[in-house]
Figure 1 (cartoon, rainbow, N blue to C red):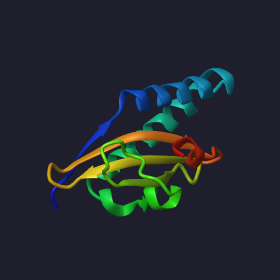
Figure 2 (cartoon, rainbow, N blue to C red):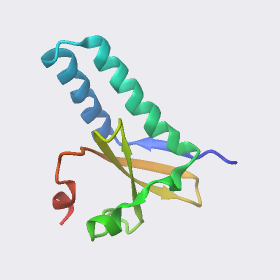
Figure 3 (cartoon, rainbow, N blue to C red):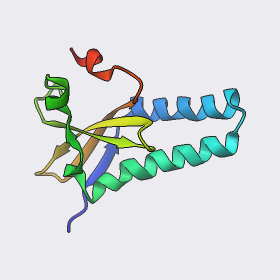
Figure 4 (spheres, one colour):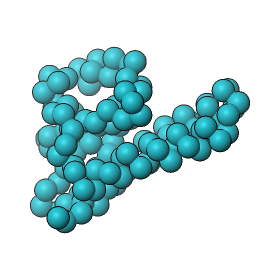
Length: 112
């Protein structure tokens, strides 16, 4: 089985850093913050082996999310706390991860 290269957008990396900072500084738990960030990255990186495992995000939301017209997929991570939206380039074996949302967010509204 050929691995896919996982590319995480700079915007998403900043979001993850914000989550880390919030947990470390507001919740006063730096150790928990680091474990959370590591777990988020691990779950995203797992797409290198199984990029198609996620749900059809375009269908779920009702619009094409990717501006280039590629199909978008989504996975739920951290026991349902977050949703990751990504595209898969089959020809180049690349997974591009673009969005991370709290599962409490009405993320579908952001794309309509």
